[in-house]
Amino acid sequence: MDFDDTPEEATFRAECRRWLAANAELKARPDEVFGSSLDAGARVQAAREWQGRKAAAGFGAITWPQAMGGRGGTPIQEVIFREEEGRYRVPTHVFAVSLGMVIPSVAAHASPEVLARHIGPALHGRELWCQLLSEPGAGSDLGMVRTKAERCTDGPEGQSGWRLNGQKVWTTLAQYADFGLVLARTDPKVPKYEGLTSFFINMRAPGVEVRPIKQSSGEAEFNEVFFNDVFVPDAQRVGAVGSGWKVTLTGLMSERLSIGGTLPSELVRMTYRLMCDQHMGGAPAIADGRMRERLADLYLQHHGLWLQQCRGLTALGKGQAPGPELSVAKIVGARALQDFAYLAIDLKGARGVLAGDDAGDGWEQVERLWHGAASMRIAGGTDEIVKNNVGERVLGLPPEPRSDKGVAFDQLPR
Ligand SMILES: Cc1cc2nc3c(=O)[nH]c(=O)nc-3n(C[C@H](O)[C@H](O)[C@H](O)COP(=O)(O)OP(=O)(O)OC[C@H]3O[C@@H](n4cnc5c(N)ncnc54)[C@H](O)[C@@H]3O)c2cc1C
Image (tube, rainbow, N blue to C red; front, top):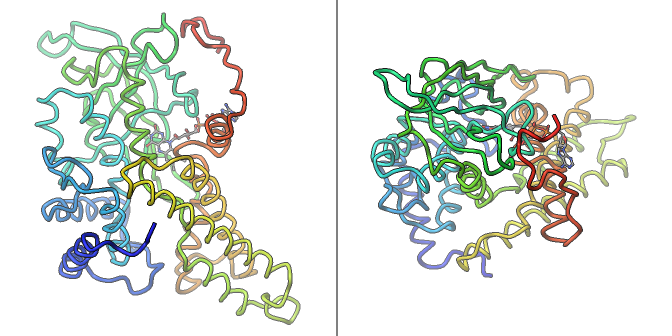
């Protein structure tokens, strides 16, 4: 594939550039992190406003159909917009789960009334959605979800619906979310994936308790969420009773379609600069063969991931879904980011313990990666789970033995 823009792509890129130049400020440095002086709540608010402006200009959900308020554009156009947006000092990622995973599930399975009420506010950033899947005993294997939804007739004003009880964990941005999509068990008497149903809830409904989890960085990006007899009207069921796994897979597939796994090219340059500036045994670190080997490894990973991304883009350009290269890119990319951050801190020696603000330009990104890269090896499928998938689906290795197949959920050993 030719990686230069086609004439249509070049026209679209020019439109993105014009709009971004008129609506945002360029970053001072490529590695500048948006809103580092803001608290998390203010960053989320800024992201809501930015999403609203993008949506009003037709850049809020480029690949969504026009009937949903999107642009009806191509995945390549989405990639082009993200590339251009990355050069500006604007909040990104806050709506990744809401618009990239949750709303696509809701849109594919909820009633027209639900879509008419909720899609617009989500697209324009007025309402943020979170994804309530993982539980203390159900992460890699969501089939083990134990949060219960039981039919009831004692809702407000005698409404019938469902009572929700249980706990979720690692729910990104739940403390700021307006709505959440919950995967719950409605029938424990059937095999684990068959007894699940999806519902959406108002995050401020009585009985919903959100407890932020403080991370080593000092931030609380994700949360525990408890449901204590939460009443959910049947109109908030998404999809048929028992089809929660199908609804969940829609969201997980949307996540997989997002192109990721590249390493910012400034990381290699930054490592090179650090190796030139930092001294080991009286000489610049770059003079040491072991250090040059690590730099070469980083460069090779960066280049390999770029080639993988090209393969993914080629598939998208031909109207196909990207294949297993994105799984490989996820494993290698997350690992490489973590290795980079550890190496950079080590190279700084004693000054490596300084906080980003004190250690100088460009250090904030290193600090964020040092704290955050490990989570990239877990979110969206741990390294081991992705390797299992690659083994089974790409290499055709025998699948893991599954003793729970066909066994009712309530008969499974705990
Ligand atoms: C930054 C971040 C954001 C997240 N956001 C959300 C969110 O918004 N909503 C949400 O619902 N969840 C979210 N999660 C949770 C995430 O989906 C889970 O952490 C992930 O699926 C792993 O599940 P777990 O933590 O329960 O680990 P477990 O599944 O308990 O795994 C523990 C360990 O066992 C290994 N393991 C498990 N099964 C196998 C196997 N079959 N073969 C080999 N090894 C295995 C795993 O690789 C891991 O090392 C988020 C996680 C992170 C890190």
